[in-house]
Length: 85
Image (cartoon, rainbow, N blue to C red; front, side, top):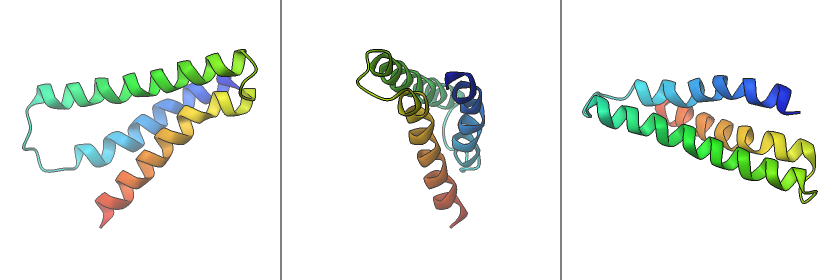
């Protein structure tokens, strides 16, 4: 399942990054870079822990692979909807 879940994460990062990029530019480049690193780190942290739980049999492999994408997808949809208003 990771074979399909991990490549989809690039689309989800774009889904999160688009509404953030469309905000008025009141911040420096360093803050934007730090935000992107933080988003990627949170994704990796969730993915790593879910994969560990999946490998140990505490989560099903499907849930373990797709949990981080589901969380990031929900965040991306919420940001997009809020930006559209």
